[in-house]
Image 1: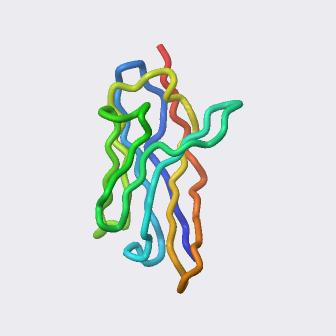
Image 2: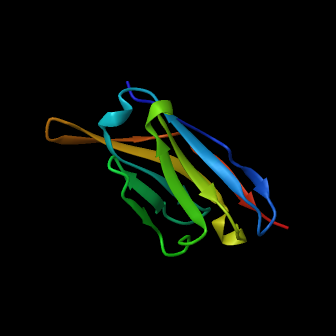
Amino acid sequence: QVQLVESGGGSVQPGGSLRLSCVASGSFSSFVVMGWYRQAPGKQRESVATITHGGTTNYADSVKGRFTISRDNAKNTVYLQMNSLKPDDTAVYYCNAVRFYDVTPATYWGQGTQVTVSS
């Protein structure tokens, strides 16, 4: 059974930084894509950043140059370093992982961690 456990959320002032972590159980190398999504109150969940097994990254335009996604295969962990945080970054952040069973994709989600940016 795959489990994703996030940590690192909290409250920070505008301009501050946070680092989110997501520890995955199961075979980490089997996850072809991992990523971070967020959902603000009253809004749809949106992709923030993704990273493939090979290390290719992709970012939402709103976070480019401020956020960095990375993965440590030895620790079964994916990170999201968030710098220059803005109030618009306030949301619940979710870790996501996708793997294939033969040709059938399976998507997993963490429980979410709250990030609040406010003065």
